[in-house]
Every structure is written in structure tokens, then in C-alpha cells.
Length: 230
Image (cartoon, helix red, strand yellow):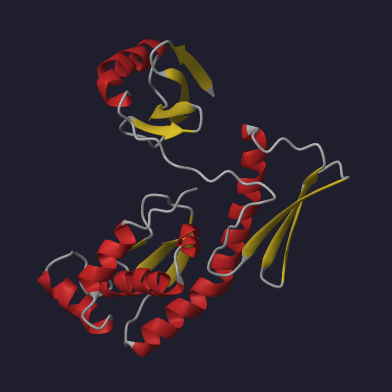
């Protein structure tokens, strides 16, 4: 990964992506991550940084949780417990609804690499839990409200809780586990409604109201402010 040290913007890490068609900038802890098409030359990267400089200076900082042994962190299906012990490596185990992460006794929890290791353990557990609980939730809600769908895929999207294709294939982000149970169900119902109404027209909102007790708009607004720290 290429890094550029800019006096005004700080560290900019360049991620080349063969599928990227546009430049995307995100504020990460301690640096700006810029995703560019893989064919971009060094000059094109420098040029786009200068062109985007006013916007990059305003890239919002994403609040993040710092995980320590004192952290009080819970998802819809498990809570977190971090321990420091006399061990050489990191260990993670999910048991009875608690994810135990054991860290070496000399761990510096302010270290970005340490936080990355812990986050990776949590994300792997969230993916596992989402694969365990989401299929049954989707099946039950679809049967209750007479929807049909073709398949379910679990992804790691941070920008969309879910999506539905024209073939009635539903995608759900495992980050939905950061939501309370009733909002997870709302996300699923939202996507199930898209199996009938693909856009967000009046008929879609009427259908979503019918399966949420006329709370579609209220729950949508609540979901928008639930952009969870991570």
C-alpha cells in the first residue's frame, strides 16, 4: 500500500482497486484512505489529491471505539470481554454469548495494530453470528408476511445495512448485529419489501408500513442515526 505524507493533510494511504471507477476518500484513525482505480499513475494520484484538497480537508472523522479490558461492548448476540494474561499470542473464543479475547500481558491498547487485531476478532465473530442467526430471522419474517426470496448473502458493508437484487436475492451486512433486535428485523423487512417494490415509491412505503405497524418512516429515521461507531 502506497503512503503519501502531505504537510497539510497528513498521511494519505493509497489503495488501488481494479473495480474502482471513482476516487473515494475516507478518514481512518491517523490517516486518510484514498481508493483509486488500479490504472492511476503516480501523477494522476498527485493531481487528484490537489483537485480534492478542499474536500479532503473536510472529510469527516469517523468516531471509533477503543477496545480495552474496560470496554463495555455488546452486539445483538454476544458481549465482549478482553483480558490481559501471561500469554504470547492473541486468542479469541465465543462461549455462552460472550466473546473472550485474551491479549499478552504487555499489550499497549493504544497501539493501532492492537486495535486492528481486536477488531478483526470481533468482525470474524460477527460474520459467524450473522451466518448463524440471519437466515432463520429472514425465513421467519418472510413466512409471517408472505414474502418470497431466492437467497441470502452476508457481507461486510459499512455503507448499507442491506440490499435486494431484481432476482430477489437479499444481502445483509454483518454490521447489522450492532443494531438492536427490532432494527435488525426492520432492515430485513425493508429488503423483503424490495422483493415486490424495487424502488422507494409510494407503493413501497405503503407496503413497509403494512408490515411495521405504520412505523416505516419513524424506523427509517431511527436507523439513519444508528450509524454505529466502529
